[in-house]
Length: 230
Ligand code: BV8
Image (cartoon, rainbow, N blue to C red; front, side, top):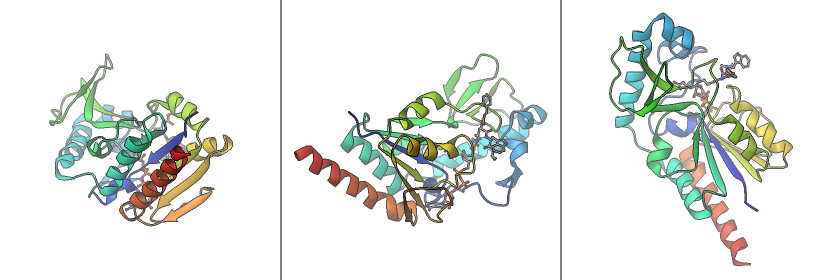
């Protein structure tokens, strides 16, 4: 029997590392229209705009570090074991990976990967992609594209004991369905967010990820250690 803790993170957990969130002016994103830079149609219409957008985001990764919130989630996996804790992230940055989390599903892909548009081959990639290149695209899931690992995520949610959403507005499908799936399976659902959303979580912790995630993880670890002693 596992504890079945499933954690979902969104852009809010990377905000204190210096990466911007998405809910700026509706539909705008880093000065671009979402449809222009985060859809297959946008890429087909103007590959250089999209390659330049993602080259900029990829370059920015070199300027940011994981926060204590990312490190706390890596500690949770380390203390309880990857069989008890699974991290699903909507983020395409590499901060969870650099913090040491390994039981991760990056459901919207990863900035530090590119994908061959014909064969689907995925490569690790940290450089700029030539702006006129249409053979290699960022390995991120654009709007209208299938997310990564959804069957595995849904399976974990269906046997979860606890679901924790951290720093996500719950506006993007299918990630915004996960709390309901976990709740239907009998999980305790917890939201950690600087601004509570209106989704029906059992518990809400209002505050920033850096303020709230480390003490939350500490409580889980202490509880786990007490249970293990008996
Ligand atoms: C799919 C990769 C089907 C790119 C991203 C109409 C209604 C409902 C749904 C739809 C619809 N029309 C279309 C859809 C589906 C669509 C969708 O949901 N659209 C939305 C906009 C309505 N979804 C899709 O298209 C998905 N695919 O459905 O496929 C299918 C099935 C089979 C076969 C083919 C197709 C794909 C969605 C993935 C899109 N790609 N990213 C890239 O990143 O470059 S999504 C992108 O935006 C991010 O990855 C992220 O997921 C999302 C932003 O969400 P959040 O992470 O929550 O960030 P946000 O800024 O919104 O919120 C930040 C939160 O943090 C806030 O709550 C804030 O309070 C909090 N916060 C801020 N600071 C802090 C903090 N919290 C704590 N501490 C802090 N310091």
